[in-house]
Image (cartoon, rainbow, N blue to C red; front, side, top):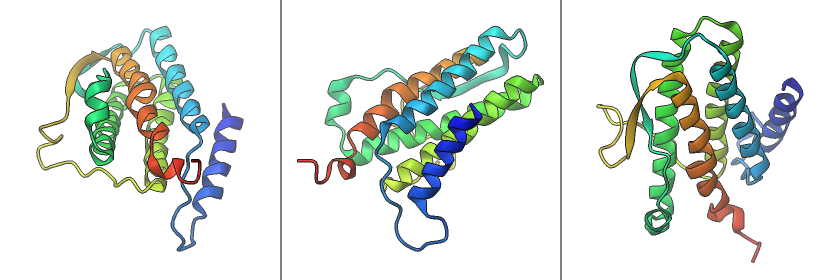
Length: 182
């Protein structure tokens, strides 16, 4: 909703204080992520309800959303962050290519919102001192688990599940958010 987005932007501006040279204050409130998840679900529901844009011209690469908690827990914070950042990069690429295939203006609005939210999640991660992802020349690093989807609804479902899974795990366990809480 417009009011939710406006409130979120005000919170983000308050936390980031544009124009100041001070480092960003960490954004640790998981309600921000919950808002992004709800909007990703809205985009998925809109795509499922629409007849247009169901198939993609060619399959797109997306991050693996399945989490093996034993493997995840064995990764250090940097490895977890890199996995999330590369996944967000892949989703940004895939959703950006989806946008080019859709002509329905309501769907465009949901897709644009998804792209803005991926950017905003990157800002949240930056506030937590998590380095931005720089893709290697050939795309995604070899160690990243990916798969390919061929429909818009699958892509948007991956988006929702990635936010609910790996992004949530990373944000809920970020050390900077737990300082002073012990």
